[in-house]
Image (tube, rainbow, N blue to C red; front, side):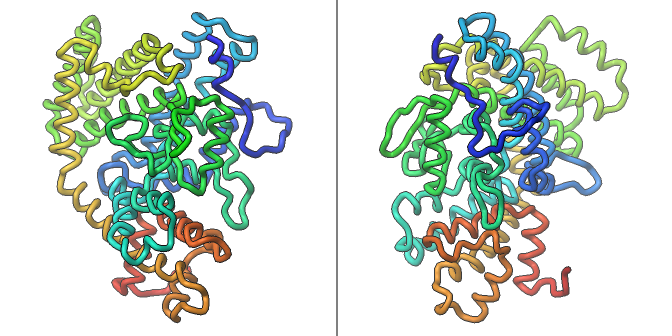
Amino acid sequence: MELLNHIYTNQRSNTNNTSDARSEYQRDYDRIIFSSAFRRLQNKTQVFPLPGSVFVHNRLTHSLEVSSVGRSMGNLIGKFITENYQLTNESQEFYNYSMHDVISAACLCHDIGNPAFGHSGEDAIASYFDRHETDLKPYFTEAEWADLINFEGNANAIRILTQQQNGKSEGGLRLTYSTLAAIAKYPCESVAKDKSQLHRKKFGFFQAQKEAFITIAEKTNMILEQDSPIIYKRHPFVWLVEAADDICYSIIDVEDSQRLGIIDHDKCRKLFLNLVESLDPSQIDKTKNTLKSISDKNDRIAYLRAKSINLLTQKSVEVYQNNFDQIVKGEFKTALLDVIKNETEQVTKRVLDEIQRFSIENIYNHRSVLEIENAGYNVMSELLSQFVPPILKDEKERKTFEKKALRLVPAQFLYEKGTKYQKVMGILDYVSGMTDNYATELYRRIKGIEIGMTI
């Protein structure tokens, strides 16, 4: 398949070539893991409130685990491609030795654009603009307004990874186009959103990054579906990044709930055992025997979690291989984990559905989760109300308290000479980049709940 020789590229969005023992794709991974945006994920909620006496996953630990699963998938699929398709020497080298690095790096940064407080933070930003439509919409074009009222962490990830902030290096993290394309789950602009189609369920880039995204798509030979508004087919690597994410959060959230006492140990054990048996009946006896040798309850669940993730990874790879030609042509329509539900034994669908149903009822709607989501929504909304109205005014029109509010915003996020849209996007860079703790602390100080000197 000729296209396989052209769907990746080791070019960077901006780079100075230097002597380095690492491959271009290994450098992507390192640049992400050493970035401040990635580091801040350690204090951003995954699902449960950040740890007290019991440690649960945050966005950073989740991203590291997704990256590990993605690396395994990239390894297996890379070998599959080299063994089954005619390739140039350069392409064979890539799929054999570098594809896993691309998938791993993309998985590592797949959540890097998520604001504080999980999806509640996204909702707060979008709702703020929606609630103030009468006052704010006249400042923006239709496409710009669509970005704001549909604020999306996936699009924000592309912005963080490619945007040059005031006083910082040109080109963001300067990743390869391959890694950037691999995180584009929704390769369309906001006005093209369509929840009935998987690749348009949300959107993948803001208007400010439109030209950058077109370049990413062209460099990696993504298939253009429509040019106005812009819609691309997903890059073939996206399916693996999405599957790694889906596998991890669906399994690990249940493990976290067991540690927190939300789900009974025996119930959790049975869920995972049923999943293992449905995915590979030949392993159930060995799995049960191993469990007998483990006395610690948390370790028993950790063992079953590892087995479940491994089997789901193998099944996802099989689905990807079986549908590979459709995926490369941009004709595939269903997330890999959903295919597993529909194509495997009925018991697998039943178990996965039970895990999903339990997660919705008992985890995502648990009181502690709802409390942090509601608190986070209010915190983010208040911060936006402090910074957005002043930034939309000219300097001479701002009242004294508005000028003081903007002095709280670091200079790298202030685009005083830009358009209204650019100015507001700078404020969103600041607010969405905050950790849970920083946003909460700033909120308390602005509202006068906590007063004191910070250095």
